[in-house]
Length: 332
Length: 306
Image (cartoon, rainbow over all chains, first blue to last red; front, top):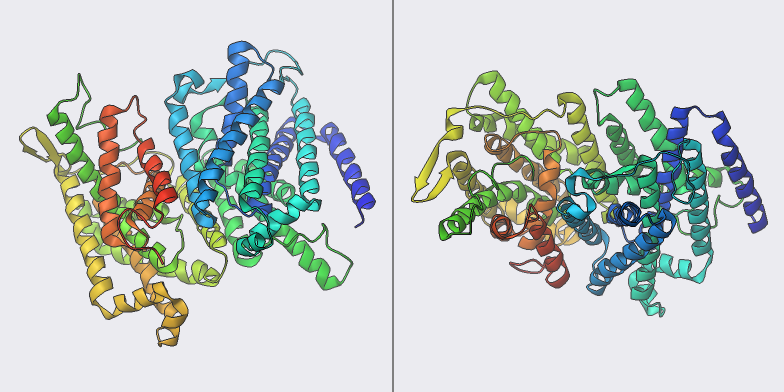
């Protein structure tokens, strides 16, 4: 698809998404917001994990930094979360640079990078649990009485829908820009073969750090959105392995390192999870994660490039024109 | 860790830190190290041989513990008797997992292998949550509360048994790898798959057996840990990160290293509980882990991984 046609298609898609709230019940609205929010987080993760190929389990930590920073600033000083989220984003980016610099300097990558970032997430959880200033194990509660856009507080859920949708559009625009820019090509080169990329004169450290900082910054903004939508944050729900995995799984199931993959993954898995949850009821608390695990196993075994990979090979087999998105390497 | 009696029941920080308290903390750490080691020997084997990060290892431990629990409930024995059934059971489970899930992806990207096991971990952990509910379960027996007092230091019998078992299991695996034909093949397949295959070693079969043994070790760990810990469906998640820490600290594929690393990690943790504010001590193993990964990725003890 040519660029103008893609932009047109995107505009139509987002116009449809913008009209959607009129058709949804309160519960469906909740599911829709979750899809958009986690698609957003997964897109942020995708910049580092997908395009740059550094699988991070640290995004729960970056997200938590954003959620905690803006919430603490709001509760202590009344500072607007719109400013607080920028502060949180900067903190998360600095933390990302720190973790990234340590890891990349010693050439830690692949599964070891995943373990290092997971260890940092665990450190974050223990520190947050023991820091009374951020609520400790009790967590923090954001009271909402009235609609206040500047305080990111809405009584009506549909308002959150539009805010999160706007952020999703932002993340997709950033991703689309990366995909087309020289930076994106260099990141993909690093993902595909670090030694070859270095031989081409690409500064590995600089580009990996750029991806880490950008990815962490955006994920932290998502943390603030999460905190204000759920109105409650605590270390054990925000900073646990399941959160780190969930952010990752949507991108992998949908198509790692692709523009639409995270949204596809979230749009498929979250409703399925909700369906399973309502079918089996509250007595089977974790049953939706059984589905996530099973889908993840199936994807790794039978479709390692995710849904986007399936769509691409289906289109290729029918011989109909170019693939959905510009060829960026179908993930790895 | 939330559900163990290690940190709290035997050493109280009280007023000031006396030498007896420190001694007790070291003993507690050594015993806890035994438990860590029990979990980690199998992980060291699968990690070392196949270079696969088995994220589901903790869930296999959970399966072993529930199996032991139901064994004890049915036959009213000490949980140690359950080893007779749970050890072969876990071996078969490991072999089946390898055949169905791991063999198809042995040639895939390491990250995909890891993610597949993440998926398996989610299925097992949350499947158990659905089947068994989040309620904690534990077994009762006379042995449970018996302890030895050595001066001021108190040692619980079940923990002593766990400690002794961990030493035996580690030495047995070490012997298996160093002194048997199977061990020779496993080591050959670990150091160079293709060369081993050219030498007539059936690498797939060797991997299959190694994975079976690695998971089978949990068939010993589960029954031995049952008297010490409450079981909950997510018990694996309390241990899995620590287990990775130990395996990497010990040097990948190095059993003796993993045993020593278990003690280093556990003693750090129990001594840290005396000196660090609040309940921040569990952070120490991860800090240690991060430092070692950064500065000495071949592990604290030992030869380079490759």
